[in-house]
Length: 221
Ligand code: MP5
Image 1 (cartoon, rainbow, N blue to C red):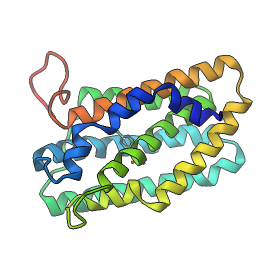
Image 2 (tube, rainbow, N blue to C red; image 1 turned 90 degrees about the horizontal axis):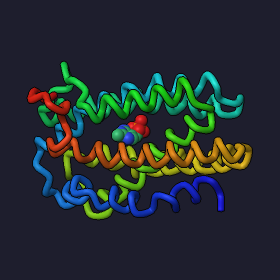
Image 3 (cartoon, rainbow, N blue to C red; image 1 turned 180 degrees about the vertical axis):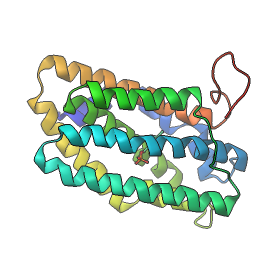
């Protein structure tokens, strides 16, 4: 079994829990309150902004053959921020002055710390986990959402063919990095993969206001 399939197999129950999350099911069914979607949008905008310097840390360590795909992904993230801004204007969501929730802040710090301090293979594992999580999650939404939904642009972005191709490239390359890694690095890759999936579930939770603040502090983003 290749590394990507092995990492997924190890976290299967968590992965399934993520894909059953009410945020995805209710967005698919048109049953999610707009304010709940807006809470996710405001926090995910901050996440995508931070994903750009994370990619920069990976790019600095990347083998030559990975430079162009990673640089292209940075450009794609910038386009994605444009999609958020366009949808925010259309739906009356204010993206300005948003403070990162505890979960968003922690996830972003985890990304940046992994990019800065861990091996390329470990950072790449986190990138793969986050991208695969979004691809699979938005495919759940795609399987039933009204094509006239205001949120269809997000579905097309992460569940579309171009993103599928990117995730499939990440998968192939992660398999190669896993083959080249020693046992200790592979164990760290597995830990990071699982931690990323846990962050992904926590991120859907914050849309509901159950995890949108900082523990002990009433004010929320
Ligand atoms: C992604 C995201 C996908 N936007 N938000 C979270 C919480 N996880 C993963 O990353 P990208 O940069 O939008 O492809």
